[in-house]
Length: 195
Image 1: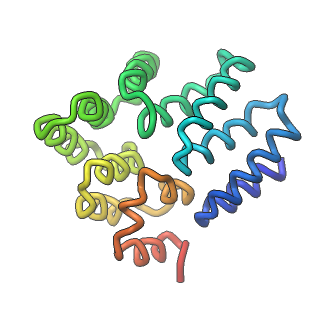
Image 2: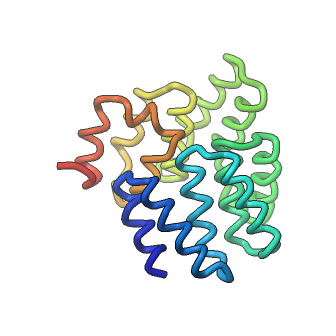
């Protein structure tokens, strides 16, 4: 349990490698619980270690095949780093269970990942911009960043309350171009991550 808290604290300030060490220690000590391996998978994915994250997802699904936590973690991984076709299938299943969870920009983004073109990119951007405020805020910033729309990502991030963003989200590998922009320092200060 203490390793989970340490993981969250370290990841929240961008110390992802140190956070992953804590996640691995937590899983070694509490391998009988699903929570610690979820932290480990998140840490690996945030660092961009696709192979390790995929291996640990497979391990977790062997031990806890029907645990609902892994459904969300798997979707997050496949959405940004993994197989977009698999992510689309997972998204379909999730939306079938919960109609409130429908955010068309996610589907449009995955269509762009499956068949990248100017048309699918324009549609993904249009869907992000048409999404209701607050719905999937971090995902929308991530999608705009991955589409190379850094200015639009900053415009969106500027209008979302800071309380709706988990701090560790900003340090994921998918948001590296967002962080590389000089505006990130001002944004980090607004988030309480810098002075």
